[in-house]
Amino acid sequence: MKKRFRFMTVTALALAAILASVSVVFAATWSSTEKYGNWSNGGYTVYNNVWGSGAGAQSIWANSYSNWGVWAQHPSTGGIKSYPNSTREVGVAIGSLKSVTSSFNVTVPTSGAAFESAYDIWAGNNNAYEIMLWMNAYGGVKPIAASWSSTGDPVASYTNVSVGGHTWNVYKGSNGSNAVYSFVRTGNTNSGTVDVLAIMNWIKGKGWFGNETLNRVQFGFEITSSPAGLNFMTNSYSVSYSK
Image (cartoon, rainbow, N blue to C red; front, side):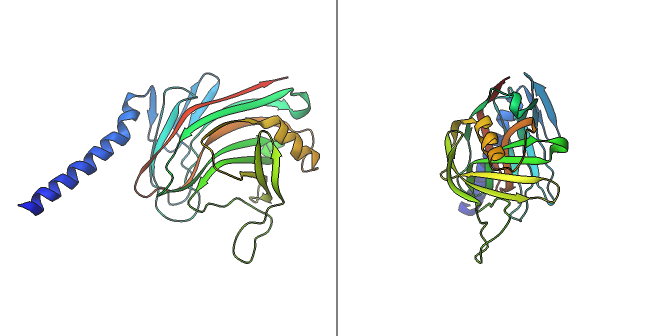
């Protein structure tokens, strides 16, 4: 009798956890379980964006471009499974921009997952340049780099660079199709404001690109694994620019 009661209790708790994880989805303005589900709101587009090999289940919900989240259950295997995000298109050359700033606030798991909360910024013809800003990272995820140490760690091109309102280690590499510049914050944070234009001008000053067009600014969660099923939430997010 005790064993049966224990089984029923565990089952009830598991069901409650599942219902809790999806209750926000049903209450939201928009939701989707489609891999490439997307929703336009307020000049932004919110994407589920499950694209990686071996991905598991992921559902997305949004009340606005600024307030959205996902429940993700991806297996403990290597490789990025998804990048759910909110995107704002810009389409202005760096030299014609007076300012580009963005603010964010997230609630994320700190264990049981491998991921980073990150900006993904695209510039140049055919998105030749990808600039990633890692605001927090968990589970041993590593940025793209040009070289790696004997211990298997990426080697930074520059360390402790203070630009855009934060301090970063900067990695320069390629994914085979694009040049990738990864700015990995030296300490995790779940909220802040970033001067995106200052970072792009810093890259330009290094001669890594010229007066490229800033195509779009994305912010979201680059998820490698979350086997138990976890929630990743953007409490607020916005991008503003002037020219």
